[in-house]
Length: 184
Image 1 (cartoon, rainbow, N blue to C red):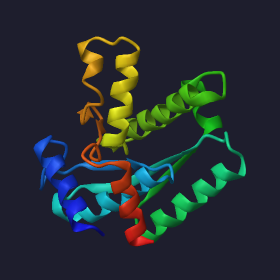
Image 2: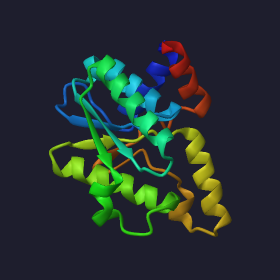
Image 3: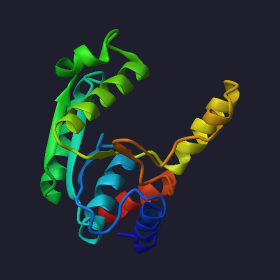
């Protein structure tokens, strides 16, 4: 594990008030199986002794990519088991009422993920950590500016909002890939 990256995430979490040592917290990492979310899981697992939170994970199998989605689920299950992190898996059918129709597209997939997150929050999780990075931040800001957003939208992705933490906003996609390569 790259100790410089770990230190950056730790410093960012403290500076932004996302995590504080000794504060009891039930934290769920949103894990898709991609590099950003796997780095989130690995980094949060490394930081767990420092902050003292209870870590679990949640995964949504959208069912949009057939066997690829099932392989992602199996990979996340195996990694969580290897790391000793409890995992809760959701499938599209059980979240359909919250996500609505049509059952396709990125907007529907996002609604499905947030329906999952709302369920874990309702079941006693204090916060869901998502794997948004500084690279996502730049994309979001450019997209919002191109749409003609106001000042609020120009602010980009915030490090937190009630129930949600984004501890990787201080990293780039290249950083998350380096974290994943270091443990491969």
